[in-house]
Length: 566
Image (tube, rainbow, N blue to C red; front, top):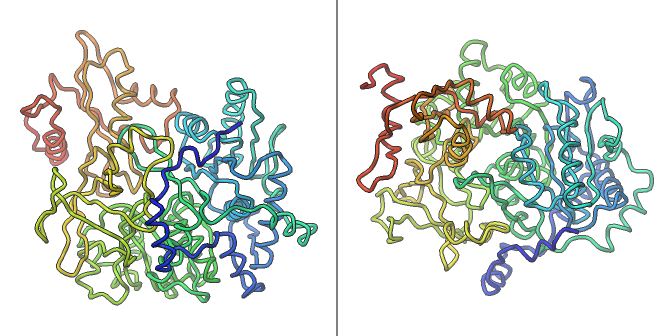
């Protein structure tokens, strides 16, 4: 039996919680209540449009239909034996099934753990154990990978280890034996009134954990971030205000929906909270995205810098006429180069909104009415008046305004610790509740932040954060390897890719293909795979004997420019 979530969640101090309630940041309602209020206001408005679902025929759900399906799916989950407080891994493609299942979990008090479609056995097995999950939701196949088969392998492992029942929920046309048909589970209600009555009796409370997000951790596998109904309701409502999303808005979600950015900044949940329409697309490739934006009259969407660059290249070649409805393009997940930022409005015709934030809480937005200079050269300022931000040196002393330093933050939607992670919490949070984001920033006189880099040892590949330590630990398992350092290799398309510097044991050899094959056998997510291997006699070291990764990053940059010293 899974342990109660509350046993492992670090709460806000009660004095802070009372202040957030008194000052109106925490409204005392659940996400499900907010979304059902939207359904009651405009029951016949389109809530979700999935233009590529069901063999291209598409699925469109009104708010009334979405609310009824979410209730019905919640009851069906409970009938499977999944209980309030249980955790379910959600590894679905963007689509109507993701939306209905997520809302069903929120309604029943079942907690979704937002895995990513790119995760494989290595990550999923860890998440299943760490979250004490009782089920997983996956597509049957996606991009030629058999998610259903892997899910059953995981289920078998969990059953052998714990003896507990474990459910595999599958979305797709090929639902195999032993799987639960997710499309049927998320299908139309047969008795909406009875479903609602049953769920109204014992739903979640506003202080309960609503969802687990994943950190882009630096110490190996991702940490779990417990977001409560109170803090996430504020997160989505305030984000919607920042992006000017309202009932007339049409939001396209094309980044993986399990990320905080497309889920709640304002994303899917923020758009539904105000009565807008969510359009789902499994990929942000411009060939499909531009057609969808035109067909659905999309007004808002969110992308990472690599996608923004690809869209601008495509628009310069094919024209941007199909983007006529697009008002706001949010860009986040990594620093957007100033020169690219200046091209967004002239090339795509939309207002750029830079978003700098983290699943751990703090969100910064450039305002839509900011000057073009602020929009193009900063990453915005905190969205909440209650957000506290400090820029400090290595001894936690505040640096002068305008000087670079380490970002610390706390506030009404920044949790006070990771889930079941006491050791990591002692490093990532101060004793008085400040979260150490690991970002190096400067703060302007107007309060806008400019991201200068990362203090944490992390590689940002197209918005996906990769722990260098995790990659190094895996490479050290190879018998040929004496020393290894994983560093960020600059890349025009994705920002950074993984490069390995390796010192080999005597009389051995190693190729990049061998490294990737080894990681493939472990079952690591593809985006974490090293993409360059540099074999050296020794690794550059700092004066205190640590591997000098700054020197290695400079070396690979020179090598890419063809000027590396031997």
